[in-house]
Amino acid sequence: MKKMKVREFAESFGMKVLAGGEALDREISGVYIGDLLSWVMSHVKKEDAWITVHTHMNIVAVAVLTEASCIIVPEGISVEETTLKKASEEGIPILGSDMTSYEIAREAGKMI
Figure 1 (cartoon, rainbow, N blue to C red):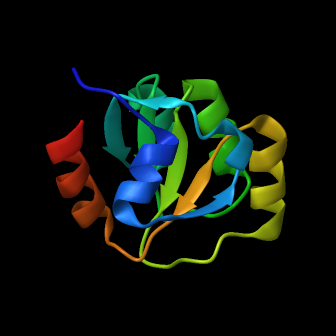
Figure 2 (cartoon, rainbow, N blue to C red):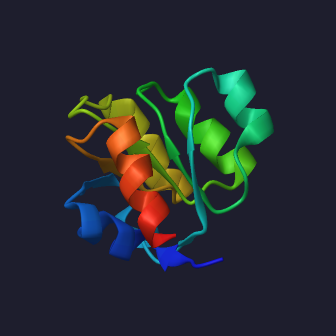
């Protein structure tokens, strides 16, 4: 299994680092797409990059609990300021992308 750093991943896709810039050296070994938080909590694997359209603070708690490498918010969706602040406090990178969830996962699958 190939791994890459969150920093490399973000740069490869032209993603914006919205929060958690100090934690970009975390490793990504997979990608998970999901929006039902209870489902995500039981399915995201440690070191997964998690793609979600949710932007409220609960996504940070889920990422911490599951040990996800980062959160990716697709389609240019704006993330709540309180969420960004909490992510930075917890050391969870949040990346923003104009790509769809499918496009991100498809391209990531070629790299990881």
